[in-house]
Amino acid sequence: MSTAKPEHWPIHQFPVIDDQLHIGNMPLTRLAAQVGQTPFYAYDRSLLDERVTLLRGVLPAAVKLHYAIKANPMPALVQYLVKQVDGLDVASLGELKIALDAGMDPAEISFAGPGKRQPELAAAIAAGIVINLESAHELETVARLGREQNRRPRVAVRINPDFELKTSGMKMGGGSKPFGVDAEQAPALLERIGQLDLAFQGFHIFSGSQNLRATAIVEAQSRSFELALRLAADAPGPVRLLNIGGGFGIPYFPGDTPLDLQPIAANLGHWLPVVQERLPDAQIVLELGRYLVGEAGIYVAEVIDRKVSRGQTFLITNGGLHHHLAASGNFGQVIRKNFPVVVGNRVSGVEREMATVVGPLCTPLDLLAERMELAKAEIGDLIVVFQSGAYGLTASPTAFLSHPPCAEVLV
Ligand SMILES: *Cc1c(COP(=O)(O)O)cnc(C)c1O
Image (cartoon, rainbow, N blue to C red; front, side, top):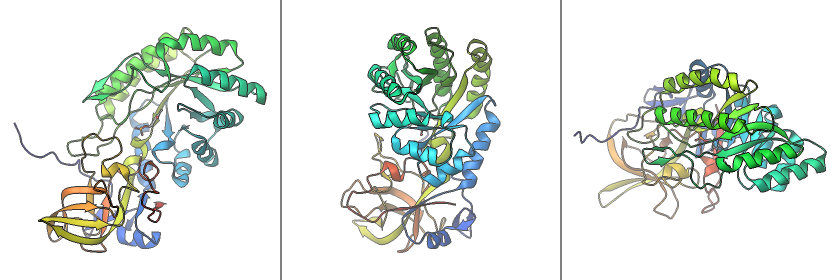
């Protein structure tokens, strides 16, 4: 057996010129000067374009692409993506505002999430977006709010599937969940929708996230199609919307490899004629978050101090867990692993060293890289965390320890 340590999948999306990382055709140090502060996140428009082009090139043309805003709700980024995707998925009133401000057609916005509050549901009805119902109580509330507004709410049913998929220990759906309506309970809910003055749209079946194995996604999609075709028999009207989730992962950690889209495209190609035959009005939607934006973004922090503690070198930066919880290992990871990190203004460097990169917070959790081989960094150098375009700033406890806010730029 090989004992070679697994390595990060190489980062090729940002050019390195004269040993300096470039983003948006600009050397990182110049971009830092333009932003006017560190730390900051930077997201690259051209990489967003490339990702959408890649998906459109591989997936069948009939499959619609939605962006799940919670991955990165920066308004400028959402505005940019609105021109490229077919719809947006929101999970709060705040995200709905971003989606509408960005100019997305309300007909192509859907709203999922357990525990939607009445003002959120009322806003969704007024805007005319699709509400993905997550419970029988929510259904009754939506119907009542619709009567109050004299409008017919557009509703889909979010299904908690009756299948469970296990991939590398990651459970992808099924079982008891706060999300959606159990598939077994769906027929009763569908009947009730038919009794109320609601515009039935279809189904939303989301079975998991951050999957790097195409076979697991293929299986989830096939089971979702089967389930939707079965449930359609009880639907109170034609299925117009069939959102089969996403779950497309990106390589974050040593040993991770990129998702192979080909088998997924082939499987969708196999199912499309079947679905089009049985549900001729249905639009098939994939909702993607991190796959669209995650690899287009970096997080940049500045080295404030360096020191050696009992043989271990620490680089202390002005950024950390309060801006980038995921890179610190505290956003759902079971075992902490390093995101890919480099010293952005001296990528290879003259000398290399083993260093641990930390933030300024008084907690041992505030790590950006643990014992990584990096170019030997000096005070003022810029530490870059790759794969940071999704679940970055808004997924972090920014108020923790009351440090200054982080900037975000779209380049
Ligand atoms: C979070 C979420 C997504 C996006 O997940 P990614 O892993 O970022 O692709 C999509 N759909 C729903 C319902 C979600 O809750």
